[in-house]
Image (spheres, rainbow, N blue to C red):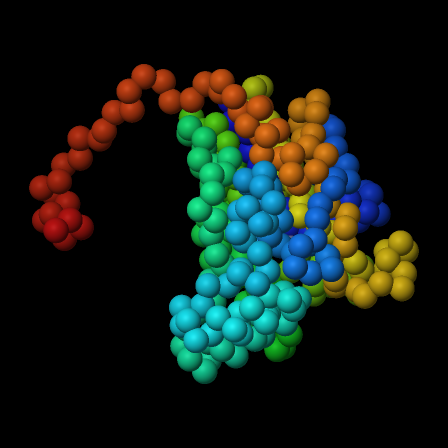
Length: 304
Ligand SMILES: [Zn+2]
């Protein structure tokens, strides 16, 4: 059996109800507890590193100020300063620094153990744990929107990335995998772009809901699916956000699972997932190698 964990950034518990998004109501779950550390509201890399490790930011080391590992040590100060700004501002500053120095901002990765270190567990991309590149691409996209990228190009890029991530998760159900995790930044980017455009954000939620349904439909009898978010997103049209700044992170993190229970806090996710995955039947016997005709590949120049 496989536990699939879809880390849907900024999936907002209030908006799930407001948009009546049944596709992400999997059985049990609802709003869950999250936390803020370096900012007033939950900050993406800090929370996802906690979700994967079960540890406080002080323990996993992925904190706002240390989120960026600039390749140029002289830029450490800039990195510390930008850690306290919101993500879109950070993107702009990151781009500025890149254009002046040619260096590229990277999201740090914890060296602490995570749920993806379990036997036969796999992870596609997960902020603070494995491959921050897709999150960087989503931040770059938000930056491009701020600089005038068209709506159709933004959505094409954003949902193209989203489809790859969901497609990977669905494929993992065909393999002897205990835990499969992927972080999807679509609703955070859409939430920042469409915080005052109810129809557009509703559509984005509907698209993501459709992808969740495809994974849910592909589950085997023993498989489990967990969708979880790190925070929600305040909007101009959601009545409880009246008086708040639209496009800022809300405290309405969400989780839902196909199992009878569901984590109640971002700190509980790792233990919950590992408990569900325990004793899962994965690769049987010895995993054989492949007898590949290397001579032919050498002729083709594919091998040295
Ligand atoms: Zn986030």
